[in-house]
Length: 99
Length: 220
Image (cartoon, rainbow over all chains, first blue to last red; front, side, top):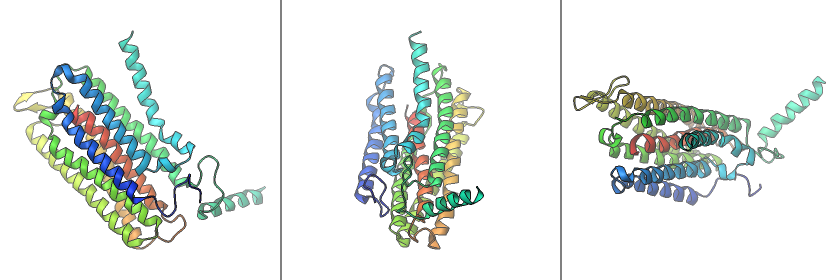
């Protein structure tokens, strides 16, 4: 049994509970962000912060709950496929902004 | 030739049943089922990506888009979000139980996960009923008697409905695995736990997508 791979006898329950608490904490922060950053002049920081929090939470779920942390490189490449779409979107947005 | 082929096939089968077998250099000890599930998840992720991209474009290019928080109930949805996160924890505990060959633990946490899924669907059904009553439908949107951008309702139901279908599929999948877990199918050692792991992957993906949907549709 290699340490780099998922343990047949299960991962640390403490890790899962910690991840859950972090996700719950970030969700609570998310709920307060629209109140703190209200008003049209604060739309951009609000948007950036909320998207950052959501992406962070999504990555935490994939990395720990979906066990990507313990998987080999090739499975990680498969998992990251939809991210290319996000990068392509950003490319299109940059093109339209700096045209 | 055929003998050599069948020998290769036999060794592949043997490998899949022997957890301590030699690792694949690319995928380690990941089973074919796990690789297939990840490929499905990646493709499904792109389906959601397409929907969210369309939503983003429609919203940015509309001058009269309403503020979602004023129409959609954020607090109720926050509870639904919390329920999904809780069910992700219970799901991972169920997988842990199956790996430990602990039938009682697996069954108990699977049940908690299923209840979380049903609760989420219940909240979504309540939300839909309430919104339709207020005038937000798939094709037309009115709020407090005033017509608003119809695309608000269309995109809302398209994205959250597609996700809701995934939750429904996930709950049905979980119920099937729950039945097998009750019979002790997944706690027999070796890689018998992998079925619970696969439903777990799907369930966490559904949670992951909701994290993004909650932010993009409700909070922004």
